[in-house]
Image (cartoon, rainbow, N blue to C red; front, side):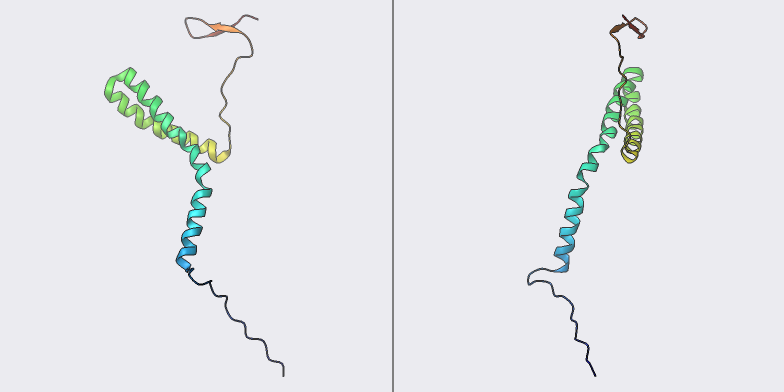
Length: 109
């Protein structure tokens, strides 16, 4: 009759505990997620632009409300663009020209 060999569980090296390994894994996961946090800049810029426009139009109360609304909208747009991978494109004119008094662009050629 053949006897099966006895298999034992692997032991951690001396000085390492399960908590230490779990903490190291958590730190590694946090470091891997840092580049994704850079996409949250829409919140800050949205709050800045919203508070500026609100303050310009409706005074201090408008600035406070504009900052809150701008942070919400900026965060939502930044999150959607970040999750879907949509690049933020700026509109550029393909011709040389000028803006008139009504903020309309006119081409020379």
